[in-house]
Length: 430
Ligand code: NAP
Image 1 (cartoon, protein in one colour):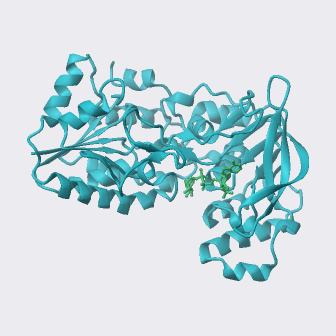
Image 2 (cartoon, protein in one colour):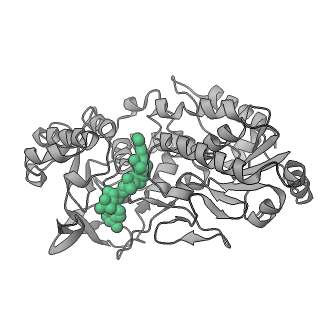
Image 3 (spheres, rainbow, N blue to C red):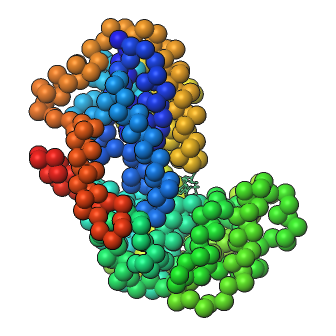
C-alpha cells in the first residue's frame, strides 16, 4: 500500500487527490486545519459566485471514494509536524494555498481600518479566523488598493444592496453590517494603467449591472482606442468594459471610481484611517510604474489592500521569500515532500488552473513513490493523533455540519455557514 498525505483541502488538494485515487493500492489522507473542507472555494470565492463554488461537488465525489479520507480539524505544525508526516507517508503534498496578504509596506498601513483582502474576504465568507473583524463601514469613502479580481470582488460586495445578495451564502454578520453601511464612494487604486489590469471580463462586466452603484473611469486615463488591438482577446474585452464605464453619469448613490496611475504612499488618520495619500505614477518602457512626485489625498474610513497573497512559510521547508511560495523543483521540495497549487506556483490563475497542476503533481508523486516503502501511513497518523488526544473531523462529520448549515438557511440562501470552529464542532455533538 502507498500512503500519501495532502495538506490542505482546497482546489489544489482535491484535484491532486482526484488523480492519486485512480491508482491502485493507494490511501490518500487530505488533512485540513478547519473542520470543513474546500479551502478557497468555501472562504475565498465570492459568496455571490455560487456557480464557481459548485465545483465543490466534484471534490465531494473524490472525497467519497474508498481510498480518500478527509482528516479535518488537524493542524499541521501543532497537532502533527511536517517531519512526522514525512516519516509516516510515502509522499506529503503541501496544498496550503496562499492565505496571507502580501504586506502593504507604506507608512500608516498598521492603522485601524486598514485591512488586507484575506481578512476582508474571509470575514464576508465566514472564515473562523476573521469572524470578529468588524470592518469599519461608517464612513462614505473606501479605498481598495490593487487592480486584480480580488479588488473587484471586494468593491462589488461593498456596493451591493441586501437584495442583490439573494441566493448567495454571504454570512449573517456581513449581510447585516453591509445593510447598515455608510459607504458611498469606492476608489479602486491601480498603480499602473488600464492596459496593465489583472481583472477579467466577466468580473468587470458585473460592475456595470449593480443596482445602486456605477463604475466610473476617467477617459483621460485610457490609451488611444487603436492601442487595444495589440491586447490578447480577454484583456481587450476587459478594457472595452473600462471604456464603457467612461460614459457613466453619477446617477446612482454609490460610485466605484477606477483611479489609474495612482500609487498609495501613506495612510493617515488620528487613531484610525482617515485618508490615503496617493502619488501619481507614469510607466517606464518596461511597464513598471514610478512616482511623479505629484500627490493628493483621498478620504477613507476603510482601506482594503488587495495586492496579492503569500503562502505562510513552514520552519524547515525551503521557501522563496520574494515569490511568497515554497521553493520547489516543479513541485518537488525535498525527498518525500511536494507542493501543488498556489503553494507551488504563487497566487495566480483561476480555480481551474489547479486541475492540470494537481494532475501533474499527482502523476509525479505516483512515479516517484513506486509501490511505496511500507510506511505506517494512515494507521500511523491515527495512533499519533490519538496519543495526543486529537480527534479528527471525518468527511461524514463534515456532511452533518453541512446539513445543519443548509437546514439553517432562510430566504432561498444555499446555506447559513457556521463562522466559528466551536459552532462547527457543536453541530457534530462535540
Ligand atoms: P493579482 O491578480 O495578482 O492582482 C494584484 C494587484 O495588486 C495587481 O493589480 C498589482 O499591480 C497590485 N499590486 C501589487 N502590489 C502592489 C502595491 N504594493 N501597491 C499597489 N498595487 C499593488 O491578485 P488578486 O487580485 O489577489 O488575485 C489572485 C488570483 O486569484 C488571480 O489569479 C485572480 O485572477 C484570482 N481570482 C479570480 C477570481 C475570479 O475568477 N472571479 C476572483 C478573485 C481572484 P501590478 O500589476 O502593478 O503589480
